Image 1: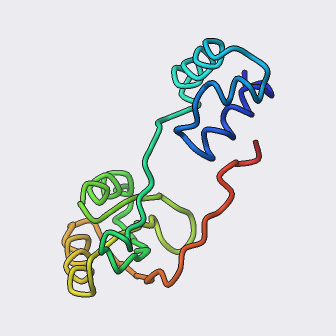
Image 2: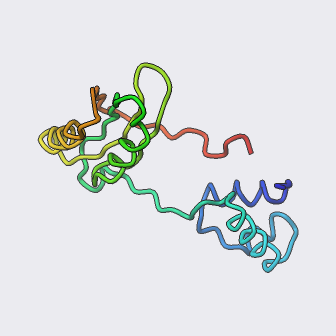
Length: 147
């Protein structure tokens, strides 16, 4: 069960995953070892999945980010999504409801690289259709998920 102390820990780690446990301990009025144990429990229980690094693709020369919506053969959504997720340019794949079966986010160097990536996705036999939308600007949403 997640209590208010856990929620504060999660908020602070979501804001900065490198925040020292001493700072969290000061904020919640507990010892650093107690915070460490709580974080370890949150990891063990799968509430914290990972401590990740977020990179700005544009600053790495990845000048084209796109959302690719995909339709796949009936009953093949999961396997197609798994195949697509292994393509180097794909940063995430979501199986969705609505007009399309899934959405992939891709990062590419330029339009030619983008075209080759779309061809890779389209060459998967169970992919029936793709429709792409180039990202003009990305705005960060609420990381706190209602904590």
